[in-house]
Length: 385
Ligand SMILES: Nc1nc2c(ncn2[C@@H]2O[C@H](COP(=O)(O)OP(=O)(O)OP(=O)(O)O)[C@@H](O)[C@H]2O)c(=O)[nH]1
Image 1 (cartoon, rainbow, N blue to C red):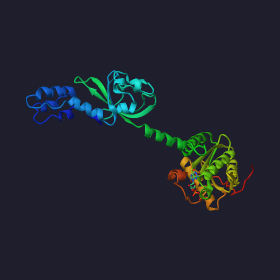
Image 2: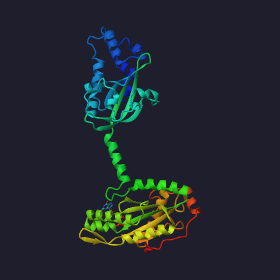
Image 3: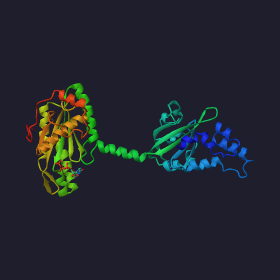
Image 4: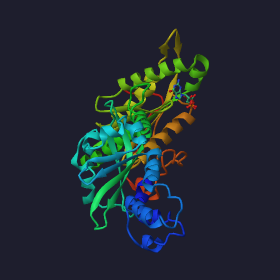
């Protein structure tokens, strides 16, 4: 890191040619670049017929040409120097920021974001601080930079400056945020996404543990959905997925959640269901709803769904194990011809554990020893409304 070596006088002394009579003294001493330059100009005049190039100028040129933005800030948080990459990143020309307080460059001005405040925090083993900061550009937009801050000390051990090397991470941060949003919300149907429902399930498990209320998860997978895409195109497939989402929402209460887990898979979370019988009824209702033809565009499209149901705690004590159990039951429904509903069955040989995460041996044994219900769903039949 450029910022790191700026504070290393040994590196600068290494520049001194072999003939330098002061090499040993230089290597042992602590000099800043301009002191070193003065020393060399003075001491080497007799040795060298041609004066060496100015180290200050060379370093200034090197730092000015660096790819990452570099700021030098004094101990009172005022900018004393900025390079060209900083101008490209922020839109501020060096003369516009020199003399300014660093807080004027920040999107939010928190005293903790100032450089002088870093003195109170522990630096890394390299003697630097690394942090991520949101700063403001000249045009008012913001950028996020990974910043490595190196302190500079004088000969008396007093902190005089900070060198901040800023690496722009705005794009990767935005991509990550977009990815998170996509995972928390499904853009096509507007339903919760996989990450969101997993989060909700985890907190519902914690609440069910406290309250002892019944919590269940339904895993819904459409049967033969690929055929709709293949025969009528993706846009019809998309419209059918949206219609599936609204039909599934019609079978739940507002305290429940329907999520699109991915592709043609949906999850229904019933965090506080009145009884196991009600949960089974909702599962069968979902099968029934999705077996009614979908009128999309000019055509009517027949579809069906396989649904698996798992209860906390008997079919799993974590979000992953519950989802695995519901998924396993859904696969059993599919293997038996689809368009039906099955309850997770711990007696059956697990076929698909691990699709979300392997159930741990402890968890599985806890499941086997738990109060397993003997209730089963009736495949394909709708009981009640
Ligand atoms: N239109 C559309 N199709 C999607 C989307 N996401 C996934 N798919 C398609 O959904 C299909 C899911 O594959 P499968 O689960 O094998 O489809 P299936 O025909 O229902 O198979 P079974 O589950 O075995 O009955 C694939 O063809 C994907 O291309 C989407 O957002 N829109």
